[in-house]
Image (tube, rainbow, N blue to C red; front, side):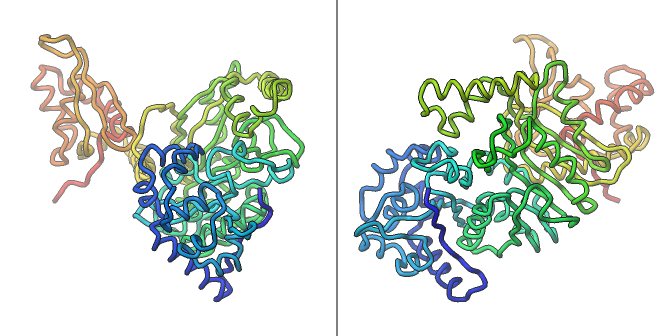
Amino acid sequence: MSTHLPTADAQDPESSARTARLREALLAADFTADGLLDLLGAPAYAALARSETVPALRATRGDSPLETLVRLFLLQRPVAPALAKAALPVADCLTDGWLVQEGDDVRASVDVRPYGGPEGQDWWIVSDLGCAVGGAGGIRGAGEADRAQLVLGVGGASTTLAGITARRPVSKALDLGTGSGIQALHAAQHATRVTATDLNPRALRIAALTLALSGARPADLREGSLFEPVGDETFDLIVSNPPFVISPLRPEGARLTYRDGGMGGDDLCRTLVQQAAAHLNDGGYCQLLANWQHVEGEEWTDRVRSWVPRGCDAWIVQREVQDVTQYAELWLRDAGDHRAGGEAYAERYDAWLDEFEARKTRAVGFGWIALRKSGSGNPSITVEEWPHPVEQPLGDCVVRHFERHDYLRATDDAALLAGHFRLADEVVQEQVGLPGAEDPEHVVLRQNRGMRRATKVDTVGAGFAGVCDGSLPAGRILDAIAQLVGEDPVRLRDRTPESIRMLIGQGFLEPVTPES
């Protein structure tokens, strides 16, 4: 790991001009997400995302500017000055430290990885060499003190959080634990002011590089842990990909700050969630990724539900569960501990299992938490497990989830039956049963967008959903169905609101205002 970092001073016109020339050179060479895919092909491109470099090396044997940039910034190979000058403003890059001399050649001081924005923007994420993906295991030759300050680039967690974040125009956004600045870069597109914090001062410097190189407005960068750097300030949006890994406590100098929060168990995630309400404006969102313990004798749903602060609605989704051995092995590999040798590796593995045993932890859940400060004394808290594929981005889906639950909270059964609804887009009906049977065993409604949920309904529920086009109130639809199936309409009206609420809550039906 190089202790040297480039500079990109947004307050210095000459530095800003040099950064702009570098950005123009990257664009001119097509050093973009699409350009990489075209050059490398899908298999090599995917391998590079797994930190496997051999396929990309084989695909960049030529002398084009794009191949040179891939070798410099992604494969971290020294390059002859003549090739570098054909691709980059080398004098500018040496002045600001993006490139350094290595004998007769030049090499990159940081990893610079193309990243496609949500509206087709060409951005670049800066990180430590070897740390674009794959954790500290990709680093060679760094001491414990250096490794503790490593800054990672784009990974699956980063893109997941970016995809689920509510993208509304806001005045103030906070990226808590910014790392390489990915969430701050996204927030800068729809927030007037972005504050980014990190315990690691190196991360703040790299986040500034990511923003500058991508042409985004500078963020207000502050050093410190959790909400300490922002005092009593409040925000319209808080996003965080925090150091949520549940790991054995280690001395501060030996911790990997990008993943180890320095608190025992899942206390860091709990603390972040519980303190968030005090830093949210009314109607504001806090969205984060988290790990939580599955403790013997305790329901995990009760555990995370207890974290939700008063006055906040919440949607908590568990996406994956790993037993403690899988979890320990994942993060031992992430740190490169699997290369430590048999006895050393076994000792470190034992330490992880000792930690879990002491906490009576049998498994660890991973997922996302979305809070909205509603101020309601009757909060809507949804805690669910959904390991199935979803369609990103889900930011609008998160907003609509809370809007639907606002409606349900404010609507009694009489108002519900007087309400008008429409079937959500791209919902299909499936009938399951034996071939040739007169009636299906059950009917399934399935979403082809967003969360891609599926739910069983009876024939009344299926008929009701199929007729909902916003033109008739729910009660009149039920009366017509009662007549068709020969059921007492009063009884049908009495028993159906619960099913309608379920279909609304899960996004199959949407309340609409009827045309006058």
